[in-house]
Each structure stands twice: as structure tokens, then as C-alpha cells.
Image (cartoon, rainbow, N blue to C red):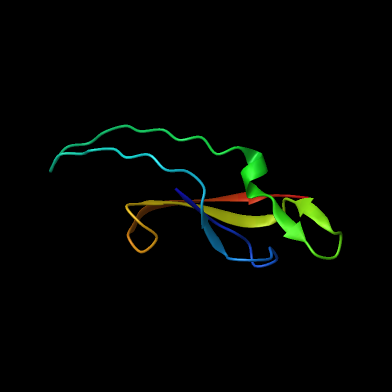
Length: 79
């Protein structure tokens, strides 16, 4: 699972935050779950000289790798 950050966040806009290998046979479906702690969304704030969670729209991305995204969901963190 990857998180895509709002533009205000410093550093890379997309980072891997969780990994789980799930085998899914052709034409089958499987349920899988992952957990990402809210603290995993923290980025360094140069102005405040500390880690913080930036407000804005984030996207959770699911795929076999960063170039093969098959699912995504936006969520917003408000100040």
C-alpha cells in the first residue's frame, strides 16, 4: 500500500507504507486487510522543525508495485 501526500508535504509525494503478499487465482477474489498507523503519515515540517501530519487530501493506493496501481481511495485530513 502506498500513500500519496498533499502537495504541501515535504519530500516524495508517494511512499510505500505497508506490504502484504496475497495470492489471488485468476478469476477469483480475496479479502485482505492492512493497517497503517496515523503516525505513518507524518512528514518533516521545515518551518516548525518537527514531524507533523499535513492537512489536505491524501490517496491510499493499492497495487503490485508503484506503477501497477489497481485501487485507490482519497481521504482528507483537516487541521
